[in-house]
Amino acid sequence: MGNFSLSADVHQMLKNKSCHNKSWSIKLDYHFGGFAKVSPVLLDFIGNFEQRHSIKLDPIYTGKMLYGIYALIKQGFFKPGQKIIAVHTGGLQGNRGFSALK
Image 1 (cartoon, rainbow, N blue to C red):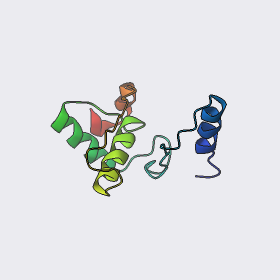
Image 2: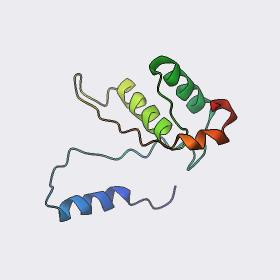
Image 3: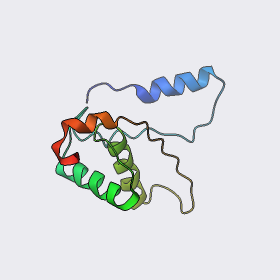
Image 4: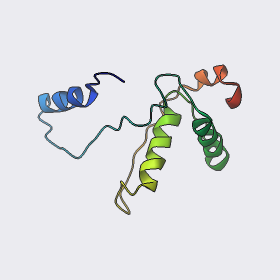
């Protein structure tokens, strides 16, 4: 994906605000090939998530974010009982372009 400096940018912003907490990370492994790229695996996850939780996801942002969180949970990345906060930022208007999500 090229030279990606998001982690360094966030680190600098936090440092500028005198926040020295190092307990955050940015995971770049769940982009599915880039912006607006999807796969059958992602679309299946989004469909199953909506069926199970009655919450719609989009394949551009929130679907990829929650897919990544669920993958990290399965990998044991988070400690048992650790709280995870995920913010659903909307973006559902993008679903109109994906026939599998209509």
